[in-house]
Image (cartoon, rainbow, N blue to C red; front, side, top):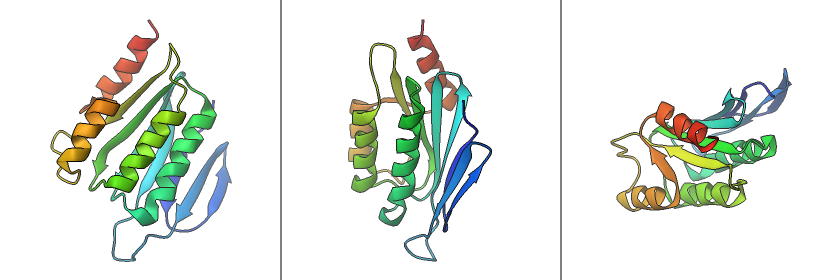
Length: 151
């Protein structure tokens, strides 16, 4: 078990109670920054929550959070994108990369949560997310889908 992990745009790496914080400067000081946080809502589920605008300058933040989630080795991963304001091709590729590297054996599950009306995500990426992932609009439904996989 580990504590919550928070990766935020802004500057350094800090260890704290088995959790760590990785900050990155935003691509442009006027742009919103990305925060990605890892938590473990249930013993076999890792939750990666991204907030704000996902943009090329903040991609290492999301990629590092997803890599850290993989190192935890929980069979289930939920990626919550419901609070992001934009998603493009680079970010979508990072999600596909996470899907490829996540251990989806017969007991693992990977779900993505997006807002029902995700205006910041182009339609083509919404369609691709739905084809590539188990997509939910409510976090509790995604967590329940992982729990049902265990049964």
